[in-house]
Image 1 (cartoon, rainbow, N blue to C red):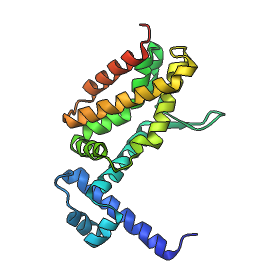
Image 2 (tube, rainbow, N blue to C red; image 1 turned 90 degrees about the vertical axis):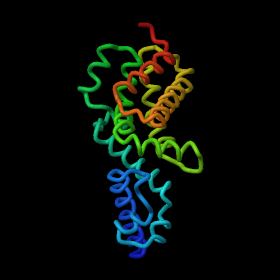
Image 3 (cartoon, rainbow, N blue to C red; image 1 turned 135 degrees about the vertical axis):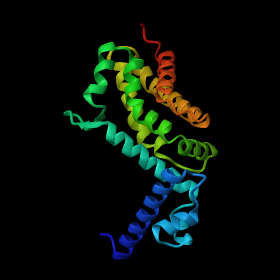
Image 4 (spheres, rainbow, N blue to C red; image 1 turned 180 degrees about the vertical axis):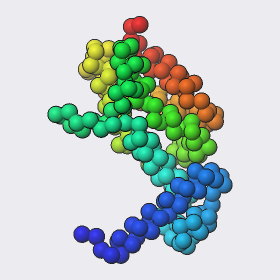
Length: 211
């Protein structure tokens, strides 16, 4: 059971993160300062720093943007075995009809492609922070696990990849995708169609599905 002090701390934490999110989106990473976040959230600079420095706050905010983007673009379906996040049926229809693994895999990358190209300046800063090390992000934890498992399912269910090779290949697909995201962010790419085409090409090379 949480104490009043813990609840106040959590509320303060949320205010700081919310203020940082607003400023990062409106002003960009470079245009946002810790002092500005403190002013917007109504707390001291020291309180902001107790939640996280500017880089840590961006990682947290960008992870929240990722979660929101994925939630907005997916629907939760509940088969007997578990709850699995799937894209809407309309998004899957074309990929299912084509039947090629790369086409089907690209559907599941759409939320992140959209986010990285829409917030390209934040994405560039986010990628730079993660590459420099010392920060953990959802892109390499829960999201990575869920998306890699979805990739594994897609490449095995029609016999494209043997079960014993599926985990390694799904991991390769995921990290190829993240590499392309980071490369696009570094180059300031804001064209989701071009990035999706690059992702599909990489997936096709890894899957080597017969056309």
